[in-house]
Length: 160
Image 1 (spheres, rainbow, N blue to C red):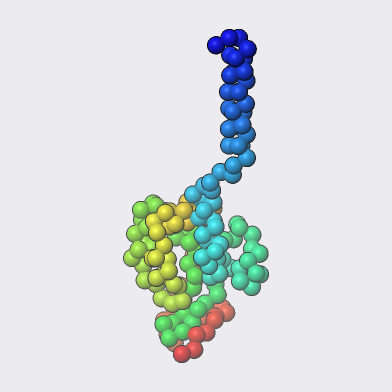
Image 2 (cartoon, rainbow, N blue to C red):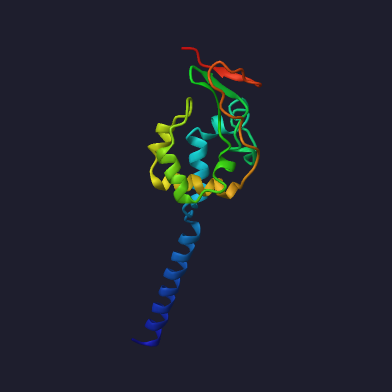
């Protein structure tokens, strides 16, 4: 190979390398586990109950308030339940404890535990990563009230 051919080969290799680098810079990276968890929390309806004012404000609630539970009660033949503050609940849980909790919990209505249980481990781990990234905030939700007990605050009533 003569000098001219060597120079052309080196230039071609440089252009190929630069093109690959440019393409890599333009290719969006995959979301982190926590970003995927944020997406799942948003589209799976977790905020609908577990974030105060989320539905009433058409989802326009500061992320700082996400998943902090709610004092709005859900009342029916089972009594009155409240959406758990997931950030307090999960604060001291390991990832494995979270997976076990989701796979074995059977809370009272209206929590659709069967939908959460149907999620795969990767989705649940992503939600865990997002909630851990948010960190603990707020106070525990009010305690369950058995049928016949009056709630101190507002409730949504399910009438059979």
